[in-house]
Amino acid sequence: MAANYTQEELGRINKDRHIHQICVLSNDIYKTMEQWVNTLKIGPWRLMDFNDKTMHHLIVDGKPVTDPYRFLIATCTCGNIEFEIVQPVYGPQIYREYLDRKGEGFHHFKEYVSDENWEATLSEYESRGLKVMQTGQFHTDKHAYIQVEPNLNFILELGNCPPIELREDEFDMYPAE
Image (cartoon, rainbow, N blue to C red):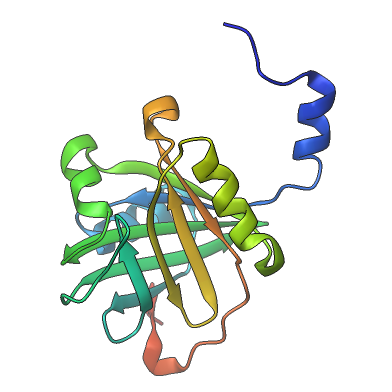
């Protein structure tokens, strides 16, 4: 199979790209956090509840979500990479179907896209036939999942990746002190 890009083009395209996060899906987020801490010494984890009260503008398969939904998210920074664990709980979102079909494990990596380039980047993926599966916003953090799975066997997430200062009542820590 021939590549669509030369080595020089790929070098130029990828020079300033930033992979911000790697995510796994889990049926039991507490068990998964414990395994990461005890097996890899990766932690502590910040556990958040994403739902129709804490998240805004959730769109799944091009339709605004009006039904209640909930998924748990744990994040941990290790060096310059953020690890994320997602556990779907209920309602419309892309995680449950993927988890049921493929099982626990790797789901996506998240690439940083600036707010200035957000719309153009989404349009560029869509122009190549790569569908936007889900978008939403948590505080100032925007996300968009791109359907690259047929070609790559995982999902791509794009995000503006701002630092988010949360109030103490917006998250729990694992392990607890």
